[in-house]
Image (cartoon, rainbow, N blue to C red; front, side, top):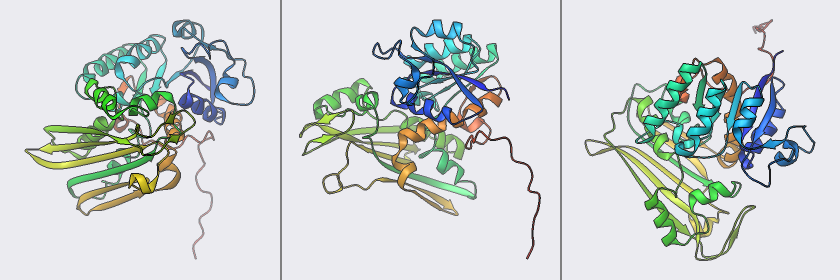
Length: 354
């Protein structure tokens, strides 16, 4: 069996989870690792990713050297949420004829100014004959793929409401910066105005749902507001004093001719407290139509988003391997499902009737 050779690009909290999952896939082999963090460069990947053993693979930088020397089929890019930062690493990977699976949220379903760079990625991927996709848990599953799939039994749909309340405590320093954890309310507002604060991907999620459900939306309106804690909070990556931002509320609403058709609401909290925060963790979606559909997601898949993101990325490797050249959003790929690592099951040998 020929193994799929993977370069892990970014060995932070998310990339480390990807490496651990790839270790469980007999059809995959990690052959290289890239990270710009000086504290990681030169160290064994097994040590950096927490495998509990040495792999013989050194975490290296700059990326060009690894991409040039290491023969790989796929690059797993887990470095950034932003297209502007992911653009060059993706192009360099494509130039080495590597397929790319990235968790860059802005590429999940590009909107606005990101459309042109997505088209450039698509052109380069088609020129070199490889596939590229952007995936994740949110965007990439909870608030978009789930309601899209659950629309299948509907004859018509009039509106969609989705709400997600999630504990951000397991996420690393990059995500803490994105959500403004530890900032003052004023600093949070300034970051929102600069476009660097808030969950990245909610606009893209809403846009994909609108596209797949056939909603002709003429405006997407996004609002972000800080949640300020009255008590100190702590996670593995951050300590937040009282009076500072411990989370955010973010809404994206889709309108057509002034009518609200899509309402997507997300709340992210570090070390949530039900009494103070006034919200319960979990995910819910309502599709109003004929028939209407209610969806509720609880427990691990709802709250272990970091592990879920890594799982989606790894499980999409076979999908991008079999996809044609170009940039693919998840709605254009073969139906996603778990990559078990086992051979394709044989047909059922016996059926018993009673």
